Image (cartoon, rainbow, N blue to C red; front, side):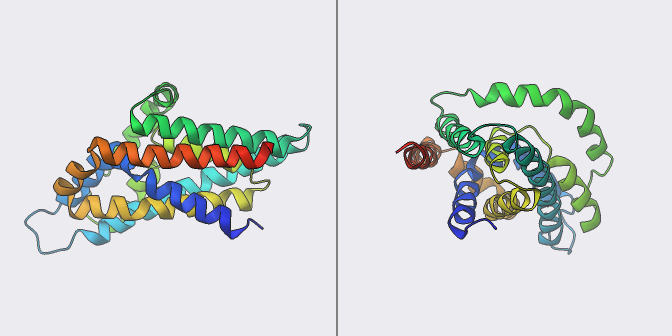
Amino acid sequence: MMDPGTLFAALAVGVLGGVHCLGMCGGIVGAISLSHAGSESPAWPRLLAYNLGRMSSYVLAGALAGLLGAALLGVLPQGQRILELLAAAFLILLGLYLGGWWPVLARLERLGGRVWKRIEPLGRRFIPVRHAGQAFVVGGIWGWLPCGLVYSVLVWALSAGSAADGALLMAAFALGTLPNLMLMGLFAARLARFVRSQVVRQGAGVLLIAYGLWRISTLIL
């Protein structure tokens, strides 16, 4: 069973990386918020359903990554340490990406974009989103949007050692992203200005880099 400290760290990465989530998913979240503009029905049930769908796809991806990692651990000498070092390196790259210092993960997102072109039209069939059921399906599809943040944590999930722990790690991360995207849907304009602030993005980047370096130091010392 994964230790609580690791799960809390994954939660924190989700919170810090939320500034990137808003850039990637802000458009669809805004569309869901405005789909009933002028009506008396509140937006939050659709926003919550969208995010639950998105989080479900993260958990599924985490389970698959954990399963793959378990297979790799069986054939790689010192595989656990190698995968954990790789995950920490990706967290550092993510921090550099968020801070705008080295957008290397954008290349990874472009590679994933080739697959996304085939998946994205499925989600378009449910837009405009008229009820929570449609929002859940859209979230489940949009959860596979190419995202350097998600890819970084999936590499971490590889080192979890099992499908269950990989899913649990991604669930903690997904929970960390929830507040940002819920707030984005309810206060889109104000929050968008806030997260576009260079200070906010660089602050989140510095914290992720520091955490990645700390993880590496604990693994090699």
